[in-house]
Image 1 (cartoon, rainbow, N blue to C red):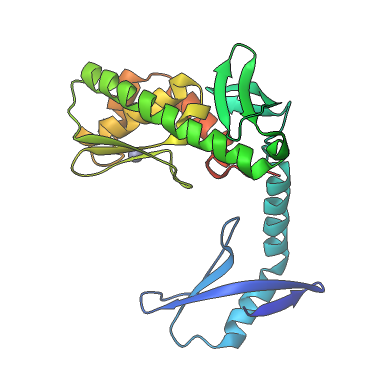
Image 2 (cartoon, helix red, strand yellow):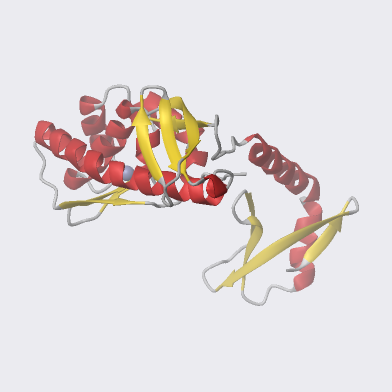
Length: 242
Ligand SMILES: [Zn+2]
């Protein structure tokens, strides 16, 4: 990756050259870092100059994303850790048992995981158990909610899939097939219902037009608050442990 020194700090950037670009455009994002899209044939010195010219702003943005990343809650899969479930922080209890297998269940006092003693500190094993359980639960629960909400909205969908996506809470295809993220089970039920209402509304409106939002608002009047919750918890999509 090319890099430019700004105030003694190296800034690395990626270049995207396409025929469609008529001007140079520089963006900074948490996911992609510094990117410049530029027309074919743009000389490197122009790219360097652009980075240098906007260097202070770029460093500010990078610092902002670094802080955001640091402030992101971390999941820990260990005894006494807290995990978000249906919008509530729930305690994870890790217990030994003599059987050579893992088991997980929901109890009154939280989530109970039982594993052989040799595995109780293995976060990868605990995480795997938790995620497989979450997926099973989501596959039982979410299709039922889709069915109930579709009925009340008077809409027909073709099928529901529950996936473990890293970027989206849900989607709807042109053929009326709904796809939902299993991590919706971590959100409050009313937030998860909003996502379902949103995707179902796409069956009649495959866009985000004012008409689409009127349908959403009709079935989910508090949808703006739920959108805010999803934005503030977007890190759940990419749960990092450790
Ligand atoms: Zn949408």
